[in-house]
Image 1 (tube, one colour):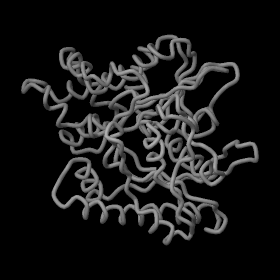
Image 2 (cartoon, rainbow, N blue to C red):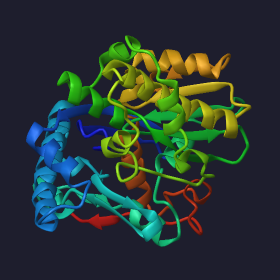
Image 3 (tube, rainbow, N blue to C red):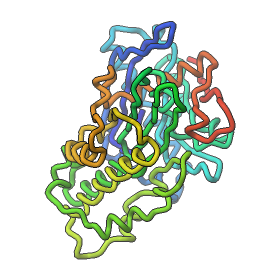
Image 4 (cartoon, rainbow, N blue to C red):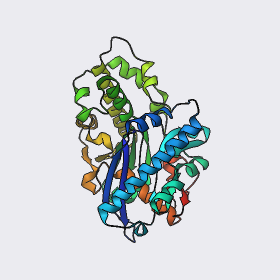
Length: 356
């Protein structure tokens, strides 16, 4: 998995019991080289010669994915022949379900060639073809591994974009994107501090929320849109933020406002759509942002907020694990989407298979 945060590749090794229970057997993280990160970021916007550029970066990604697979195999003492399949999310460079398409690059044919393992990828396109958003796809995995028979849980992934999965016991599963999270905070931190992220939210905590800016940002139609819904860098980016900036804003205060925007997007969604939930479990890189977690606890009041580590899969590996599960579903010819989440016309078998 490499997501909208554009920090690197998360690779997780999963085993599954005959009844579908998942076990995390290993994990590896490989950071993006700075030049690759910048090239991928540039591909999120229209540019010159972007078809050739996207193909070149897709090849570079495939090689980095292959390196992560090799590292996992070495770590676990396994051979490529021991692995049934790789589930490769790829790197999203465009997500336009309203226009009927989404693009994740990663050259799966090259990854299969380099790893000698069958690759399953392009999970989102079939859901979009069936009228869905193609995202979020992880709620089906959350339901499979995190649901509780008697407790109403919400799983919140805080990546570049935040999304949630509502898991009422015996009820209807739902899930959707909540809004921007790490992608705006990280970009603002990079611009003003030269660092890739705001560790523990310390810089944001040193500032004061600009209420007028927060109010303006929250007027974006996405926050009022009814689920199913998904979003990405196409909608939320620094160019969008700059449209609402004033010269007198202190950078630390803007960072505090962006953290509050992320927290409010999540908390407001829980309040509106998951009122009866009693437990909230966080995952994704933003789950390690102590200031954000603290603010979420304030906004969500008496609800228990914990990390998915308590449920058996660490916060950094849930999304990668989800795409292992989605690959398993594809290989077993089982559906991987939830129509109530994505808005698709029905259950669909997702992904394209590139045999070893």
